Length: 135
Image 1 (cartoon, rainbow, N blue to C red):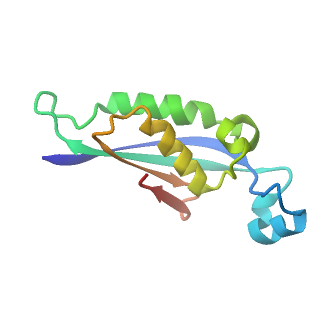
Image 2: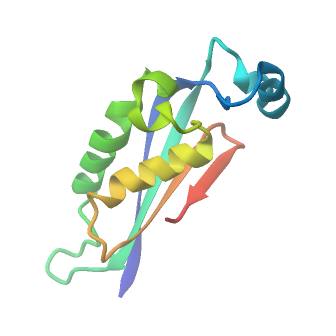
Image 3: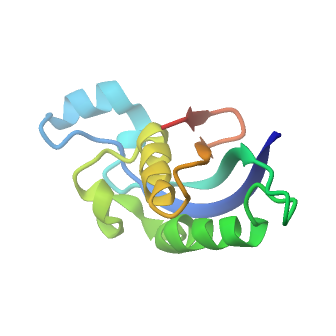
């Protein structure tokens, strides 16, 4: 029997949405106030879902403590109270949109979570704006 385990965490981070190949005016037109040269921040929520068979010996799909550890080591510690554009390697060349934060988070977790499990990541940039990335 399959089940899905969910874990939610949060982190606070600053970012700037801009394409370095564009003039400031085009960045302003496309990204609006999110292209502020002095950056801006969000209180992000991340939700991770792991789906798989329930282990008959443990009753778990995955240990919640194990999942919590992976999220902490791969997402919350490296991203929390950071300027994503400057301090997180992946975003030095990748625009830190919610979509890309979800993808990077997924990629980091996928390396740690057994491929026998289905995985998805949701990033809530605001209570009303969020992205689901299923890999």
